[in-house]
Image (cartoon, rainbow, N blue to C red):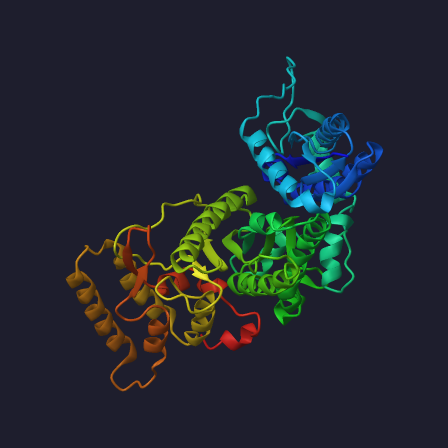
Length: 523
């Protein structure tokens, strides 16, 4: 008897969640998506006599005895998704699967995945929007027609117009119904938490003296390849169910250390200073405190590698999973959507580099971290540096021993502590000198002249009688006095750079989670 495997996937989930302008509505949307996948989709599959396989993070796989029944379920699922979240689903053509299912599942699953990708690329349908002569648009998303005029928070005295989708997302937050989404994360922290007092960006910004926060965006490397190695539906189901648990456990690892810091407990009390906004599959977007942003990302990456290795140990042919991370540091009032867009750009650059490295060296993919500090209210997304000389070494690696391809993030964190005694005046002098890198002409003599001027500057800073070798050792660890020669094929061949300008740009955001801020007070 032939079975039919139906594959479906939500369209542009991040755009749907980020359509609103408030963080509370993003978290509310994530809760609604979690509830839909966990309850609504599974109940629909049962009503249509389907054998549920996975329904996590907006992806669905259901097995049916009849193709017509599978298509009927697909239409019902898409309509339920539209009514509940206001988004659309792509439904692939049911893929025939001969029995025994265990023997043919892997091939059918891969073909269903390909059919789903093709369906997404060749969507012919459209959605008609309402047209009314006199309307009010939603003030949160700006695109939906409002259905109600209400208060969205206690601070909103006059009330605002909201569309159906934003109203539902806001209600989830205001009515403290985030248990399904945030509850498993708090459970990983092994602590009780009240859903009535979840911190937002302005609260987390109080941990920084300039009211800056950080957004962490993460995406697993080549997880599609891991899923394609699942030979049975049970392995696919286990991987799909446990991947979100891996992300939560990895995020909880640095969070446990963070919330025990004296300065965090003083200002946040019992509240958790980390707010996940998206946790679906191997995707993560979270609000974190700015002062420890890079070390937090570094520890999260290490925890993910360890947890994900255990996750795929029983899947034949799967390489140890790694992850790409982007950290965007900005003002607490900076639009989170723009921060997320910048994070996506950094993630793409990091993924391109690690794929090139793996291809050139015939090695598995490695984890990387890229970051940007958005000063004031400037727009994100500046053009990356080009040319033979650059005042950066981004992106950074999580592990060591990546010869001629850059340095580990641990270098920045360690050298930040080593330079704690250096006066800010001296830091400014060094920064001005390193900022000249991008303006050097493409000649060996220019680099040699730049290095000589650095030596002169070092002598003025250190003085002849000063035996402190901290600065020379630090510059050597961050790229050398004669610059770090970067050899990344397809990246304009070879170029020279240094990590010191990156450290200076993130100076206030490279504190170590294993040290008290008092340890840095000598500065």
